Length: 575
Image (cartoon, rainbow, N blue to C red; front, side):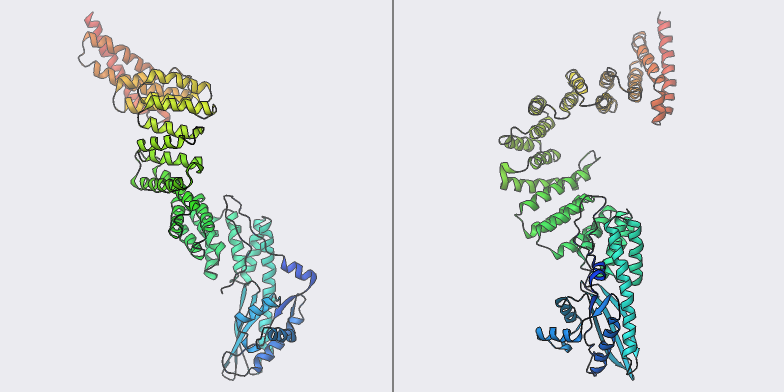
């Protein structure tokens, strides 16, 4: 079956409840005004058999339909008049032409059938097809030579089944349109039970399941729709979207690619589909869809912009949480930068500011700091009043260890936009990382006063620097000096205990090395350090217990007490 009952065009957008397009209320309107028109042409033989059996079969079926309350046959005279108008004969009416003729004379249903000789009787096949392609295949029937009435009653009973199916299908769509998901699901199931090959109700059922957040079940139903109608575009899009939501990126890309094969040169369709895929969590797949479009239209600026944005987003996803940017992410950054560079060559100063900023950021991520600075200076010639360009330019200067210039650029950001976030917090962090600790502290205090960062966040920044540059590298003097600075802030108890624990560890580690000669001089110098470490360890039990460090704390306490006893004994002996 190639036709499909469409519920309307579906626009996939970033909403949890995708709108279900409504079916026209055909059934209700038909019952209120007139009966459905059913086109039943003379049923043709499949070969060279006599036509009389098919003519009588059609007459019998029309008579039965004429007794229905909801349906009426198209009169034979009207059929012949229409055939004459279109210069056709009754024997020309195969199933395709019958459907075409039905559309011309506003018939809601058409009957397609044929028969072949079987022994002394006939084998009759047939189906009812709606004007929009939904079909009900009827089981073939074998009758004797004069079995027109029996065959007609067989197909008529199937038509009655179709009427019930259409009613449930209507309710299925109506309930779905009003977001009454449970009722919609019940009626969709009834419609499918009566006609397992119904595309419309299966598609609506899939959308209902999707909106009920039963994504795996929805995907299976979309797959069934595509088995029945491989060209169902809305099912392709939704199957791709749901596959991406479920993390099946390869399947998602396949469904979207199949959909785009139907519209290969339509850039707007391609961009919408790529956007849907990116929003579902597969920025790299979205980028690949746009790349295929650029092969067809390499100078399309809109495609280039989307490609650049998706490539950079995909690169950021791969680089997230990594100490070093992986090669795959670097390649994605290069792709994004190349696309945005082409856009800049075309649009120049008219290019979107966020995309200009992304170009500088891509150079920074690639470690191309000089290129980032040069590009920033070029852009600032035309966008000198854009705070966000000055901000990313400042980042590039800082990464190139041009700290004073970076701070000057931050001042320009503050001048252009006094509400720009984290100006003083960034300044403090940059100075701290440059080992200009005394200059960093006033900036951190200003960041707290202005509400840029909480006290705990500022303490975290300082502690991270102390740990990475001091404790981890066993640079005890630096670690102790910087961690002590965190104690100038009124941090939360948990954060304060963390500083105390690691300060104690650093004091203990430095003192245990310094006491090694075990002289009176070293004892006098290290005893206060061990004593301070002991007090700090005693006060950091909650942090240690909550971070699986309690055994370490107990070992440090025991060792520290031992060292204190040794130093005290040396001092007593020395006196």
